[in-house]
Amino acid sequence: MSKQTIGKPWNLPGYLRAIVYTLLFLGILIGGGTIGAMLGFDIYLTTTVLAILTALLTYVLRVQMDRESWMSLGWKWGGFELDFSVGILIAIAILGGGTCILLVLNAIEWTDVQWNGTAFFISLGLMLLVAFYEELAFRGYILNNLMESIHPLFALLISALIFALFHGTNPNASVLSILNVFLAGILLGINFIYTRNLWFGIGLHFIWNFLQGPILGYEVSGLSLPSVLVQNQTGSDTITGGNFGFEGSLINSILMLVVIFLLFLLYSKQFNKKWLP
Image 1 (cartoon, rainbow, N blue to C red):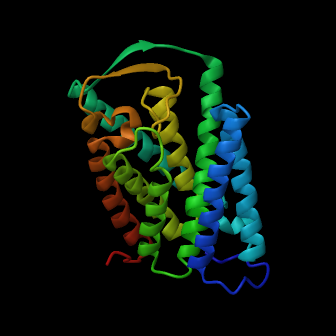
Image 2: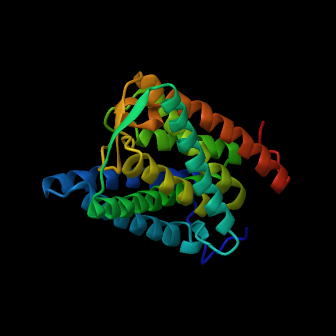
């Protein structure tokens, strides 16, 4: 994919630009969250503020430091509709399949069905915002710039590690849940290292969070949200994910590893590139 360069970039290699961005992005998350708490913002308003600040940061650094356009971050839609749909289907397959396994094992049960239209659609917007600004940051900017300096596979692993570390302070995080977020970072970035496009990751990330929390009743990375299905967990936290959500489940680990392996095989064949060592 050709770049949309609009000038001469700063004399910094891609990995240093990724480091600068990561530190500033961390500052936004810490500062925005702290100020939001001081002002009494709820999670929805705080997330909106963080999404806006992340978009502004990314735009300024992409244009002023990288000297490339906003679209070069991976926003092209035409030709990537299928990638978006595949991302959605993968999220449904992993969460749906994993939930069916938990039901068969009697590790979870649904005790009630509740409907709150306002909460449902606000949660829909919340999950869209989270998918937008996290994919923009971790894949669109960090992974994008790392790939300019180092092998795409190593860039993917580093970006996934950063993604996991940023989630390490979430409520109820465990070693297994952080490992799974690392795997999720790989899963979300696989398509990007081949296509330099964000829509696969946005589709997967959005539907994953929305299906996991507001529909199926799991926590979402340790955060509890109103849900249509009220869930009761009777199995061990290792199997169910506990209060971190399905992302903390060993079953999720296994399913993601299978899908990651299959996607690498598929994309290596489709793009005729063997990036596995």
